[in-house]
Length: 367
Image 1 (tube, rainbow, N blue to C red):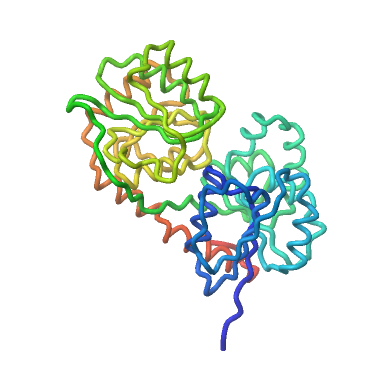
Image 2: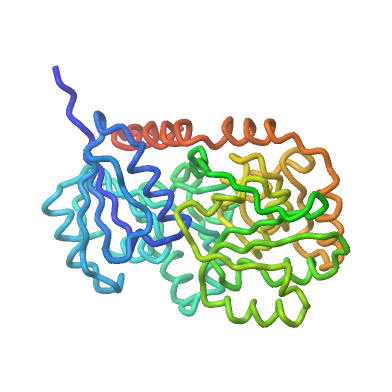
């Protein structure tokens, strides 16, 4: 007897370069399509950065750039596809769908995945007050919420009165990072530092730069990514006399090419959900120096094992001292890689997601 597949419909705003978008691509490329019939709907189907290579996943590109105009399309998707599970994985789209869940079939299970810390994200948003009211009023309509970290789960429970049994913590998956290594180190004494990420204010790259300006050691620092803060950061680099030490590279599919021999990965974020870049650095055995900011960072970094955690509010001098300490610390590259695989490998995490989907489909509590 052939078992009926679970019909899973995934809706995302886009597949541009970002953590949530990468998560969706890994999910679609690894999910067991012998168990799940998967349809991926991309509201804004232009400028796709992450490719879906799984031929069994049906991809539909829509031409909707504004989430607020997507309701007719979403209702049409549900009507035509008649899915068992509807999975949404973007903060503003999560909120939007929750408001209109009363229009969905009662049998349909709505699952959302939070990509950041809701309370902090709302405060920083242009529509923060509105989002706060909508989350507090309508988020109870969700059947289940996937949280990237314990911190994120606790934020929803404490600040939005979400029942714990409606939430489950599932870490981000990370694939093995394959690189083509060509050393760009100019001397044995020169240290190589790396940051990969969006050039936006919350990523705190400016405080990394201020800390680096205090170092007396020889180094080169590579910032890989794009964003609206680039000009501001460029001016700061000039002001700090770091123009011969800091280099920008645009976002790319293999940001770690020629970078796997980096001494340290630096992260200056003011808050994070569960940063994929730390997992990717871990897969390469690169130790991390990071501010222990709100979010799941401390659920990745074990101080002294795969990096160093600096208190979220330390001075630039203290962070600089932490970097100086880290370059002289005997990190075990193989141990860092194994730690990352054991906790965050794509096979392990996707299996957890599949089991959760099956439990929700069978009206059981995900484990």
